[in-house]
Length: 321
Image 1 (cartoon, rainbow, N blue to C red):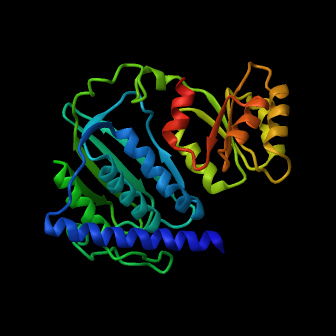
Image 2: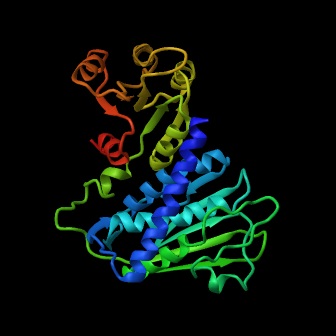
């Protein structure tokens, strides 16, 4: 029941946010906080926002190409994330349970293109030209219900226009899925960025074996998607984590301390014994962040202590280090 209430509250919050944004855009009152950032930052955050809904509908949400290099854009990271989150949300809404949603990234000399593609209900060619108009929605089908007011795509187009970019839609027809394509101008890296920085240079090219242990599937799945450049295994109990570790031999373990079958401290101790390929990096995930809590995890042999909900950039930075 609590999860249902939280999902409805999140959905209502999005609707209100879209309405307010549309009002501000119409009145010319939206101010963009412009900076140079990697498009992967917005992609990671958009996936994090939509992963629980995708998991609820048993969708496979996949980034189809590796992040081989940082792709810098000049814009408002929050607003670009909002556009990508709207495109992913649209794919989740109009794809039947068990469907496949793919996010691809490409570049040319001057632009980066992010494509969100699904194998959902698709669109008739006649509906595509007006799809980004206010209050316009694709028609519902007996298997797929509409949710929302039909303003998310209108907001997305307006925000992309403000960034000097575009957003477009395509489909091969009803029942053949949809593609939404966001395009932004590339720019030079910020002055402080270096090849091995957190923005996606050589430090991110190395792949690690990472084990995520959390009894909350809605928390574990977004983390797994964010760490897509690494080899990831997830477990929802201590016993499952131990079974995976025997063969997987993880380099790093993100470990929830409140597991249903045993404490995270006990799991950590037994994992140290099972992983024989080297000393794994142990990261505690917990809702408690007082000094005494941090002291306890340090005494138990954890290398780092993160308070839930852990920020994706925190975890990525720990792995890079």
